[in-house]
Image (cartoon, rainbow, N blue to C red; front, side, top):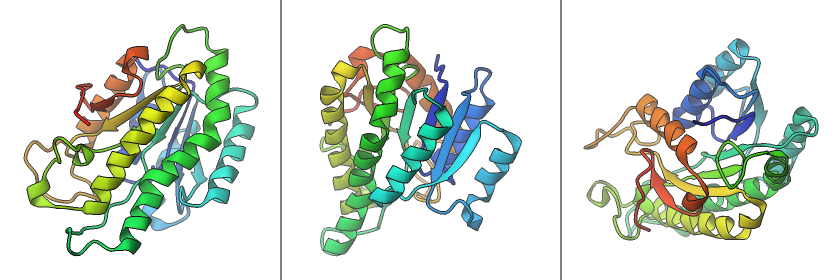
Length: 256
């Protein structure tokens, strides 16, 4: 079972990120702190998140544009102050973007923008919060690795599987697919590089979920609520042998 004192979720003003915050604070063993980040906390698109923060004192909303290095560093400093010497148990790199395209229509500008959000962003966020993750790992009495101790969850997609190329017939979205394949490699590197710190790193496919980013009706689709229930159950069951893997919301291993 997932049992964390502190968790940070990027891109938490809508879709899967918002539902992660909602279900985390609704747990019987809810975290003491849920840091919920988004680009514009004061904007109308963050109203649902603000409503959650008014209801639950544990929810702390932070502005963070994951493509802006100074923004990321400022958010990490704020979280460090809030935790008052404690570490951060769980970092969920959920924020990401997609731009429709085909092989013929894909542009260098869109490819660059999608990579900046979907690969470089999670890399910078992980680097910025690494000291807090290390602290959580060092302070934990638990042996081995778990998401309750210290972990990075990179929200990937089976659309980035080089073997499967999920729903290719319904959308090529070249930059999105390439970015998620690169995010999977980043996850593998993190799992190797930070193994000695006992920080678990995982790439996670949330399922085919109907959200603002994917408004289509697709076969085998799940609701945001179902997806997040599965994600939290899966995170609660992961251990050292899972670090560096690519799994779906139900915990099944996916091909790279």
